Structure formats: structure tokens, C-alpha cells
Image (cartoon, rainbow, N blue to C red; front, side, top):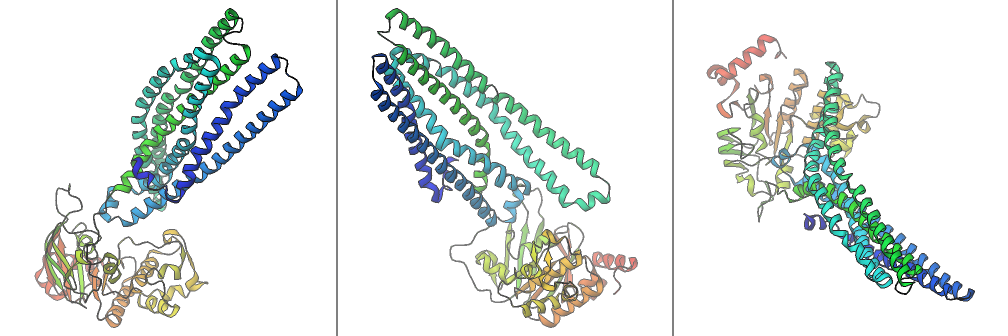
Length: 580
């Protein structure tokens, strides 16, 4: 885990290395100061004059200023290094997520990915900050302080060492008890964030069904669950401070008693008051360093689980990747499914698609229809390699899609998904996702094909109208037409519409289909639809049922020979939903 996270230090290695060096210099200055004070007290006791006192005073001032300087610089470099690590970790996690296939993304909740990019990275950042500064300072302080204490007070210094096994044992017990709780609580954090995301995204539904109180109770229960586990963990970690304080005061009682006894019995020959004062200072330094080290352990305990969750993302291998020598040019828009079977996970009990054998010529318009869960979306997801087949092969332009360069393939296979998204920005900025260099004239052209220009021109700002995140300030039908226009801008060899006209009226749907026929004759068009009117003029219609192809034919052939298609057509026309 440490090795993987360390890769994200990157350009901040110099500041990460400089911090321990500066901390070491700060510790040296701090540890020498009590010794110099002890020497000054001895000189005063021996009758030193003002010149000697001023000389020692000047040295102490310089050492204090150097300690302050080194400490300040260490804090500065530590802040740069820790914030830099956090920035690079977020960048590396985000870049890795961009490489994920849908199968990888399905493995993690969206809320979990957000938690890992925010809370988990922050925990690691704080732990790293403590490690390169406090975790270096505390052991060095203990070592230097013990050496100076031994030089100053002799064998009395061993009392400080005697308490360390007790402290370390206590710390290990605390960490052993707290770590499993943190593992559990971060998973509950994911569920909490998922509840928030789900509620905010479905706010219209929540309000329309007056379910605010129910959602508040659900969120409250999740928040209470997190609080309860965090309280248990914090209650365990809270023993850390009393343990440290207990050891500190016990040791001081022994040092004061034993040191005072030596001073009195030896009449200051073995240990005098000045050295004893320095010894006490070193004792406080050692034990306060142990206390600081205990805080480091607490922070690391919290960060360990966060680090594991981050590394889980960084080590996740995309299930879809380019071959060694990929093909970059796609000859045409022909599509072939050669005995394809597919399931979303290796653990899945049944296939989403079974033995699909389908051949589509370049430039054909193909309709795909079937009930919910029949495998329509799964079928088209395989064409642009959003998923890979489990068995068989999918060919585009006569070449297996696995042999193509992924960006080249997806640039030529334009998909308007069932749940497409618009992003915050102007209409122009959203459209130019299809072609960032497209002219304004080209934007208007594709919008006219998608029947989007008619409502865009009515906006006061036209194509410069700002779209809110997720397209919340446009209607469902307007959103779908903008997404279609964006897909057309890629000028693809294959255009896939996954139920992407479901929110537009049948008249507009017919206009869009006519525009496709007239202006995109060489583009292969695959239209998934719930309405038979959306596919009845297709060159052929594929009827899906239970992940299999039930029939393939024209509208007239299927009405005559296929029960499923005839039932769909009849039910829609009886309901009056398919009259143009």
C-alpha cells in the first residue's frame, strides 16, 4: 500500500525530503538549549560575571531563533509536500477511473468513489503530514533527549526508558481494537453518501410522493449508524491520552524522588540542581515526544483503511484495454454478432445475452425492440466495447472490436445512451463534446437534424444558453435532442440510439428519423425503441426476448409472423399511443 501511494509523491519529493532534515535541525537546537541553560546555571553558581551571562544569553537566543526558523521551514515544506500528495492522489485516482470499463465502474458505488476521492485522500494527507514531520521529530527528540539526559543525569535517565514498553503495549492494543471499526465505518460512509446522492438526484420524485419525512428518517438512521461506530472507535482512541498522561506523571514522580535523593545524599557531587533541571526538561521532551508519536499512531490507524481503499482503486485493472498492435481505421459501418453470449459479471448466474447471431450491412437502419430486460441495451453496449463479450465475437467493419484502438472505435460508433447526460456549461460547449473544433454553422446543422434548433432559437441566449448540471433546466425531450445532436457531430459510421427519443412526441420522432434517412444514408443506424412507430420503417427489426433474438424481419413480416411484435404493436395502437 505504502509503495503504491508513494508513487503519487511525484514532483514533491524534494520538499518531502527537506522536511525531515529541517525537523532534525530543529530537534538538535531544542535539545541543546536545556544543556546550555544547565551550563549557564553552573557558571552563575560559580560566580560568573555579566559578560559570561550575556555570552550564554546570546547563544541561547541564536539557538532559539534557529530552532524557530527550522521549525517554520519544516512546517512550510511539510504543507507543500502533503497538499501535493493529496493533489496527485486525486489526479491519479480520477485518471484511473477514466480508464475503467463499465464492468469496473459497476464494481464500485459512485458514492464510494466520491468518498475515496475526498475523505480517504484527506485522511492519507493528514497521516503523511504527520509522518514526514511529527513521526520524524518524535523519535529523534526521544533519542537526542535521552542522550542528553544520560550525559546530564547519568543513570537516572534509564527511568524514562523503562516506561516505554508499557506505552508501546498500550498503543498496540488501542490500534488493534480500533482498526476493524474504522474498516467498517468507511463502508458505512459510502452508504451514507449514496443515500445523499440518491435523494438529491431523485428530489422531484421525493417531493411528488411527499416522502421527505421518510428520506429524513432513512438518512438519520444511516448517520446514526456512522456516529455509533465512530464513537466506539474514538472511545478506544481516547484511552491514548490518559495512558500517556499517567505514564508521564508516574515517571516524573520517580525522577523527582530519585533525583532529589541523589542530590541530597551526594551533596550535589553526582547530580546538582542545574543538571537535575535539565534532566527534567529532557524527561518532558521524551515523554511529550511519545505523546506526539501516539497521535501519529492514531492518525495512521485512521488512514490505513483509507489508504487501502485508495490503493484498491489504483490497482484495479481495467477489464477493457487495447491490444499490442491495434487497428486505427474503421473501413465501414457493418456490424456482425457471431454467436455472442454475454454476462455482466463472472459471478452472474445467467447470461444477459445468449447465442446472438446477427449481421448488419453498412448504411442499414436496424430497429431493436423487446420487453424490459430482454437485452436490447446489452446488445448495443458490445458494439463500442463498453463491455466485452463472454463468448463469440463482435465485428465492426469486418474486424473484431477487440482489435481496434478503443478511442478510434468509439469515435466512429456514436451512442446516445438511454440515460445520457448533459454537463454544466453552454449548449455550444455541450455540443462540442462531439467535435471540439466544430463551427457554429455545423452546430446548427446537426441541431436541425435532431429537431433541437427549433427550441434553442427560442432561448434568449440561443446556443449560448447555460445548461445546469445534468440538464435540469431543460425538458426531457429537449435533453434527448441535444444529446442526439452531440452524437451526430462526431459524423460516425455507426449511430446507436438507445431509446433516446422516448421523451419526444411521435411527430418529432418521425422528423428525426426522416432526417437520418435523408442526411445520413451511409451511416449504420441502430435504433432501440419501446414504440413500434420508431422502428417500423427500418430495413429490418430485431425482436429480443430473454436475452435472445426471437425474430428478425421487416415491420410487415413481423406483424404477420411474430407473436411478440404483433402483441406490442396491437397493445400500443389500442392504447392510442402510436398514432402519428
